[in-house]
Length: 411
Ligand SMILES: Cc1cc2nc3c(=O)[nH]c(=O)nc-3n(C[C@H](O)[C@H](O)[C@H](O)COP(=O)(O)OP(=O)(O)OC[C@H]3O[C@@H](n4cnc5c(N)ncnc54)[C@H](O)[C@@H]3O)c2cc1C
Image (tube, rainbow, N blue to C red; front, side, top):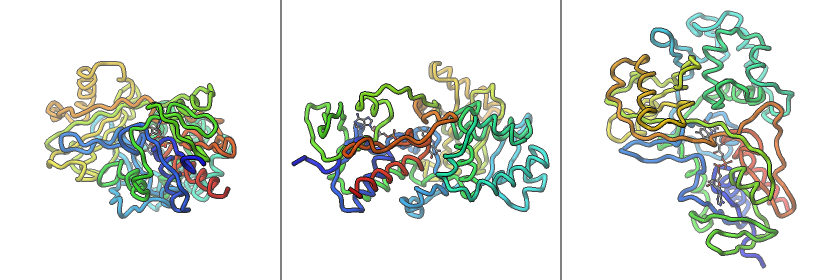
């Protein structure tokens, strides 16, 4: 008799989702998580009275898997405005609802960037993509997003001013080499829904899922060293046995367990937080984009404008995502950001106080064109889940976790 029916290795979103669905079916399991809390890449730290998400992360409220599993009203989601601010030569250009199929799409006020033909193409593309089921979107022939945008006929101006900075920020991929299938999927999410953060920080998402699972089924600070048949070897020397093992770790650890040697590449990002006396965006709930691809700042927003509970001191929290500053020391890093955003907001940036910087080398698995979903069932007793097996997103982590739970509960 084995110690457990199912052992899930990894308590990120995919492992937690798998556990949640197994729990619902009354199946027994244990989650082994190496770190001090659940959530994997979805974590929030409380620092100097601010909630700091580990990197700029949002929930796209239309995600089909998230809607199945999460209770949005309990998460108390706070929504960004449906639009973006784009840094212009002087000040900012506001792009209202760029994805929405609304009457306003034809007015110049809707989009001061791009041509009449660009706006018609957005409308046409939104209509096309809206009704395609997600699985079909990922089964289509794909090319690099940048090539797709050009092929679709969007102008150089709208690609440079909007598509590149916006999708570059979402994909963490400056040049949009990412598959056009992911572009279709994300475009659809923005057309059908909005971007949000939970009032208590992004970690409220894994916390809500884990609240559906009893605490004795979760073991934190438990590092798995390897697996063999029905055995799970822990770093502390213990050996657990299980009828089934689910590997819900990052891809490199999974490969180590499986004795495989695939090459997984990741998109990296850096997120730096500052506090200030007042909001540089004056309360506007927009993501602010930098179309100057030579700049290091990709995007900036004010979490306390979106969700006041990101700060508990009455001060403002500012989030700046950058690319290309990974190798320089912290002092130079901060002064480089401040130099760049001085041009955006003027002298007020001189008194912004640096709170913390997160360098995240493995933010998202790269998703080049030609990437296909990988098998989740390896044999009768061995399964794996995680975003890297489908596509980089919370939705994929949830989907693969659910699918593994369904396979196990059908046995
Ligand atoms: C900066 C950033 C921004 C993002 N932005 C968005 C966004 O806006 N929208 C979106 O949809 N997605 C976003 N994502 C992606 C999303 O966070 C991931 O797709 C999702 O969290 C992946 O979950 P996972 O369970 O597949 O993997 P992970 O979160 O990597 O979980 C793996 C877990 O396995 C554990 N583990 C590893 N090794 C061991 C071991 N040996 N023993 C035990 N446990 C182990 C790890 O500690 C971890 O908890 C972002 C990610 C980052 C980092």
